[in-house]
Amino acid sequence: MRAVRFHAAKDIRVEDVPEPSGELAHDDVLIAPCVTGICGTDLHEYLAGPIVTPVEPHVYTGVTNPQILGHEFSAKVLAVGSAVTHVAAGDRISVQPLLSPRNDYYGKRGLYHLSPSMGCVGLSWAWGGMAEKAVIKNYNAQPIPDGITDEQAAMIEPAAVALYGVDRGGVAAGSTVLVSGAGPIGALTVLAAKAAGASVIIVSEPNPNRRRIMKEIAPYAHVIDPSGSGILKAVADLTEEGVGVDVALECVGLEVSLNTCVEAVRRQGKVVQVGLHMKPASIDAMLWALKDITVEATWCYPTQIWPRIAGMIAAGIFPVEKVITARIDAKDVVEKGFEALLDPAGEHLKILVTT
Image (cartoon, rainbow, N blue to C red; front, top):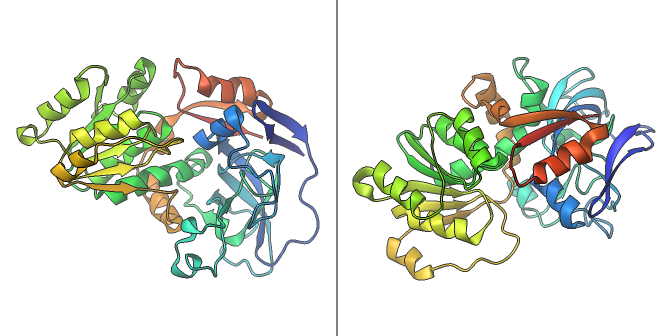
């Protein structure tokens, strides 16, 4: 079967690999992926990997590179193991890709995303979404309503990252919010904040193409170039008595972005770290104390969030499909996928791949 595999930095290949064979384990689900998103984690692997993909056997899954990529995807069920009852052959699903023990400290508490042994379909598992077939565990297969398209179902995974950040920030009806960064996660965070009832949403984004796209996706948002004092002036102008936003969500993973969020939030407001920092950040801890703020950090998402997002999409209040900017075939995944997303012009947010 055709599959997109990561071998090393700048070495992603479309290859013919053996398809899954043999009898399914009792808790396995055999699937045919429909569409798969290219994630920022995939981009980091392409640029500088292996980072997440395992060189040595993964502590939980036991796999090593090369790795079939793809952890943001939808699929059709082909067959199920003897103990699987919640999905059946022919069902359409969204894949929740996290893999972890059910019986360690975190697993026993339903905090599967926090297990130190956690793996991920498409990053540290024998199979991934950028292939014609894959095998996943029963808990990875999340049924979706008929009203959701395959593309929307593939977007649930990145939407979960965004909604979890909004949840941790306590965004509610009437909240004023700053979202720093208008990449795919930032854009989804804007949509999630709107769905939560935020009355004022300010977006900080230096790239002019991404500002343009963000204005098209969310015309209600105040999209600002952060150069100079643009963001802090906008925050002062758009919040009561200029005190600052209730919640600032950092979706870039850069020191300057984090510190801007701290400056922009009101006293006793919340800053949520959604973007992943690849190196340590210097902070002004005294300013944190002076403003009496709460700083939250997020890792992935609670896996139980899937049905909630599916319901929000089906109800039309979380239009995740707006973040999709291109659809490509797997044969073009490097040039029209990875390289296109790395273009400094920033003309794309989410690119979906069909195998």
